[in-house]
Image 1 (tube, rainbow, N blue to C red):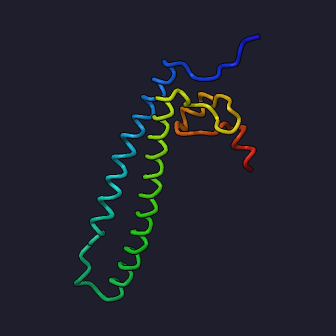
Image 2 (image 1 turned 180 degrees about the vertical axis):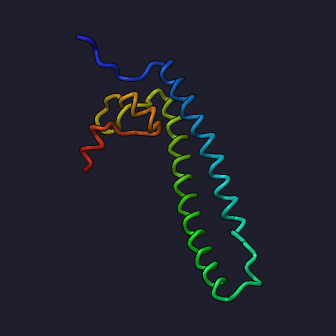
Image 3 (image 1 turned 60 degrees about the horizontal axis):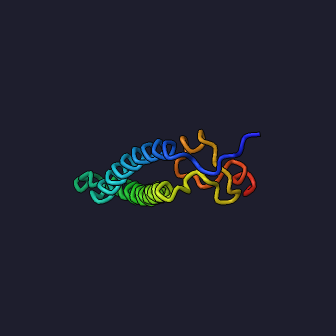
Length: 126
């Protein structure tokens, strides 16, 4: 009978760190783009167009600003989750389900590297 692993090896943690760092770099670039778009205010220069079109544009602009704000908030959370995952790697607690205490499946972590729940624990939440 083989003993069940209680944590990922240092080599595996390094592999996960690389995956997370790549995702974090991309997420931070995406976040900057979202912020830039939001700050630019989507000024399409509709001052000299018909009032009806301008009202439509303003409504569309409001909607876009709300969507951008939601997108930015989601991106901030994703970045925070990835950074927390890096901390767990440093503490050598990465990949351990916070409910069951068992190792989270490696394939799941490759797809969702900031996961803190195993599929088993996730299904228990439903």
